[in-house]
Image 1 (cartoon, rainbow over the protein chains, first blue to last red):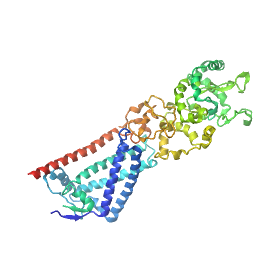
Image 2 (cartoon, rainbow over the protein chains, first blue to last red; image 1 turned 180 degrees about the horizontal axis):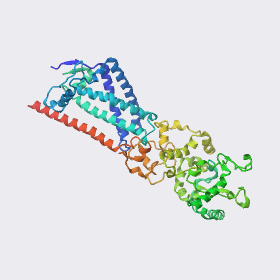
Image 3 (cartoon, rainbow over the protein chains, first blue to last red; image 1 turned 30 degrees about the vertical axis):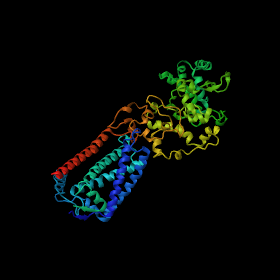
Image 4 (cartoon, rainbow over the protein chains, first blue to last red; image 1 turned 180 degrees about the vertical axis):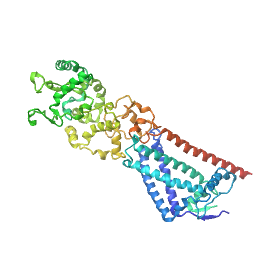
Length: 204
Length: 348
């Protein structure tokens, strides 16, 4: 019989699924814009541009909410890698995904009410949410209002480095999203962690 | 020199083809020029400007005579009051400072302004009427090529014979892409031709008012409000890049058939793609268009401006495929192994 603990308050769950919806929308429209081809359009360019702009601004607002809510509730502490065998904890977590999971071993560091994330989640989520997300959003805002970008950089249009950074940040976040969704299937059952993100209750 | 809208190119383009074959009058004019323009200057009647020092010096000397009066914004005549100078009705007679940088910059004024203009005062002395050559008298081939296109143009259809070459192309200012030397300047020049009328109620009424008196000039920003970052587009692309029919090859000049808003290009992806229409339009003059620079496709474009979809970086795209594709492959393999192991466990 599995046990369950409540670890995710409503605001985190609403933020998570809104964030997921916006990131998926921005990924599809972003691919349509970047790899634009009149003969093979995922989403028509003008429509993709409009959706990308609106969803992008919504993501900026949502990110600001995320930062403020994390500060107010103290949830930011969950993301901070804690000292004390941190690298060893990461190593054990990677070993579990690469080997232990196939042998049916239990998760080395299941969530508790005090620590929602294992060490690998802490460092990866921190890098994604506090490094790549701001980079993605700031460059996105510069794309939306190009006058914010420098006029020329190293002989190129100032938007060129902005575009490259936006693309790279987007690439990292899309890669993370794929891995994140897949690792969502590694709970007690394939659906357990998805259910947890809806109900807030973790089964183990 | 705005003057030239009335001084040159007065003949409607629809009649250009007839002028393309040298008429007797044209030959006669050559003979007159042969009399008044000694030696090397004759070569310039068809736009072939001499570049040898003697010719250049001679042209400068001739033009200096004209520019004694035709200078700046006013008409000056030594020893006489400005206002006593007779001036052709409607003709502004200033020579723009941009003339020397234009395509016609090295030419003698009297190559085009001939007949009575060859003497001073420009009266009818000797029966020589002061006249200005039409564009097609030198540019016969070009006139022949674009005649049908111009006839289909929204301007010709609306303005009829009020629309001539020099309505758009100021012969004292127009410069080729090569001469301008930068895409930015080319965009500014070519868009200036359109905005000269389409952003001016006065000019719009001057031409359109004759045939379409009730036609109000639509606000250029309002009708392009659908275009994101409108001003940014106008700094980086020309009106004609969307308002002319598609051009299939880089070596072909852009069509002179100016399309109205219903037929103009509205598909963003025409330019915003790897095989961008800008390659056969705005950037067709740029030789290195095919090359890559730091991995960017359409290197010539990215040097000037970033065009989403057209100026991607091939290396970063490859990195993207490896990163995203690699992650997908890893999770699929990982998932399959888990499924297989889980089944074996169940069966055993």
